[in-house]
Structure formats: structure tokens, C-alpha cells
Image (cartoon, rainbow, N blue to C red; front, side, top):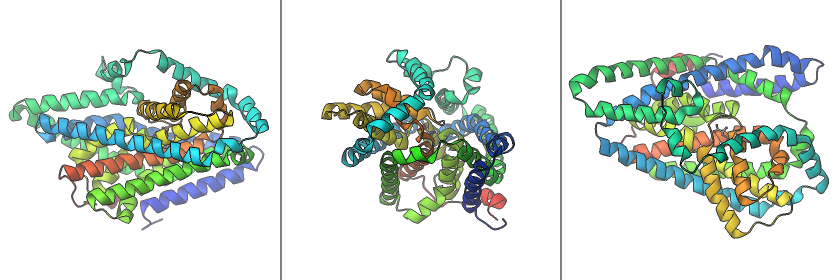
Length: 433
Ligand code: ASP
């Protein structure tokens, strides 16, 4: 595999993983064999990526914020980042709503299929409903309260508290800006070095990426439900996929318009992160690689990427919000409901908020979908309709989520005059030759 670029190696791993999964599904005991002997390697790979997430955010965000040198710059960049994230999410939801209203995939579901699906999957979706109920029970300001951890060691011990770690890191960075240089320098130097070590660790983990995705996809294939279900949900899946494709085209156009970067160069740069997002279904697990690709291959200076990307991975999920809009209306259609314009406008708001609240892990978008359904008065039982096909769609929407983050980081970098020539140095030395 010498001289093959990383994304080709990952693609090869994915292809072989899917093929291996299919072959093993046809053998007696093949599924168990894959689950016992192949899947654990996929889990180890994802774990090692997740392992990096908290130290990466801590190190790079503290360094990034303190490099900004003054607080007004930070608040300007912060405001811009959040605003663009919200705008892209609203655009994504609108595209989803437009498509699902034009294609009307729910109308092609027969009464019989609907009953079958609801019957088959109601039990599996209960856990999602329970999780969503927990989130709904809290007061309106709970999200704000959750932002501030009472203990940073505790917060760092769970990846789902990423926003708390981000809060601490920004706060720490601000403190660092405000103290005299003689005192801050050693701390900054420490985080500089710390960052380098983390980047090198990502470097090493990525050497295993082709094998990791092989194991992940082989396991996914042997564990997936039968192909018949996919056929019944074909139009729905196609609507989501078409919407996601439109989002990618939108990003490419935005990047070209705002930064002048050619579509091919942008897509080439971000491709390995997209593949990894697809294989892991987790923006959080992909974050280290998104960060590396954007900085080393797309020319975004670390000052911007280390600030914009961790926030994006946690709150900016355009693919998820688009999917939530399509799924909600699809379920309503399948149950023969006609949604008024005001209900659909409500979906724009709830899907935007729900995607912000979705954790960057597999299946999170489906948990938050429960809330979108409840607000719009759509039967939650409908979750069972889309359950079977959720994982493949999760893989695709996660790739879009990550591309959205990268796009915004480039636009912000350009506006801050922090978009330079990519310096493809240390990274390539290790794994692209
Ligand atoms: N898996 C998605 C992500 O990590 C979230 C979701 O839509 O389920 O970005």
C-alpha cells in the first residue's frame, strides 16, 4: 500500500469491509465471527479517536484563544462563527422541507408496510424516546446551565460534555490573555508543545484508519437488517441523500465564493475527514482529523480552526437538521397527516435547535428527532418507521456535518485574514507515502 494516498487506503478499507461483511453474512456463524474477532478492532479505532477529543480541545483551544491576544477579537470571531453556523443550519432545514414536500416520500408507504415497520421497531425506539424525555423535562435555561461545569476534571471525563470543556478552555485562554506576558509565556509554551504531541498522536492513529474502517463496516454489514426494508424506505432515503448532496454543493459554492478555493481542492482536502465521519457516524470522533485536514491541507490557521471546529462539531449539524426535517414530514405523510405552513415553520425552528442540541455521536439526531415530532404533533411511534434505515443515513449526514464545519472555518479564516497556503508537512511524512 506504499505511495497510496490516505483517502484511497481508507476507501479500500471501506470497500473490503463491506464486501467481507456481505460474504460473512452468508455463512453460518459468520456474523458471530465478525462480531467476536473483527468488530473489536473497529471499536478500538473509534475509542482511540475519541480518546484524543478532550485533550485536543483543551490544548488547541487554549492555545488558539491566547494567540488572539485581545478579547474583542475573540468576541467578534465568536459572534461571527455562531451566526454563520445558525444560518447554514436554517438553510439545511429549508432544503429538507422543500424536498420532502415536493417528493412526498411518505405517500408511497402502504398501510401494510407502515403497520409492519411500526410493529417491528417500536421496542427498539423506546430508548430514544426515553432519552429525549429526559432532555425535555429540563427548564428552558438548562442548556445554558449545562454549559458551565462544576468540576473540570469531571467534565473532561465524558466526551458528551464537550461543550463544557470548550467553555473551560475559552475561559482559561481569556485568563491567559489578561495576565502579564512574563507569566503567560511558559503556560503558552507548554500548550504549544502539548498540541504538537496530540497532533502526532492523531498522526499515528490515522495509520490504522484503513484497518479501523474495514472492521467498522464489516460489523455494520453483518448486523444490518434485511434489504427489503430499505426498499420500502427507498424514497425517504433518497430524499435525505439528495438533500445532503445539495448541501455539499452549497458548501463548495460558498467556499469558492468567499475564499476562491476551487471545489476540487476543497473536496480533496476534506475527503479523508468525510470518509472517517461516514465510517464512524460521529463528528466528535472525527474532530481530530477534521482539524488536521483543515489546518494542514486547506490553509486555515490554527488560531481559527482550533476555535471554530470544536464548537462546530458540537453545535453545527446541518446534515442532522436536514434529516430531521425530512424525517418529521415523512412520518407525518406516512400517517396521512397534512402539515400546515405554520407547523412546518415550527419545524424549521425546532430542527435547528434540535440539531444544535444533538450530541456528536451515532444516532443522536434520532433522539432529538423525538422532540421535533412532539412539537409538531406528529406521532412518535413514527420513529419506528425510519429506524431500520437510520444508520446508513447517519453515516451520510455526519459526513455533511463535518463538511459544514470545515466550510465555516474557511469562511471565518478568510474574513479574519487567516487563510494561508496549506503547509502539508509533518502529516504527510508519516502516512501518505
Ligand atoms: N452522528 C451525527 C454526528 O455525530 C449526529 C446525528 O445526526 O445523529 O454528527
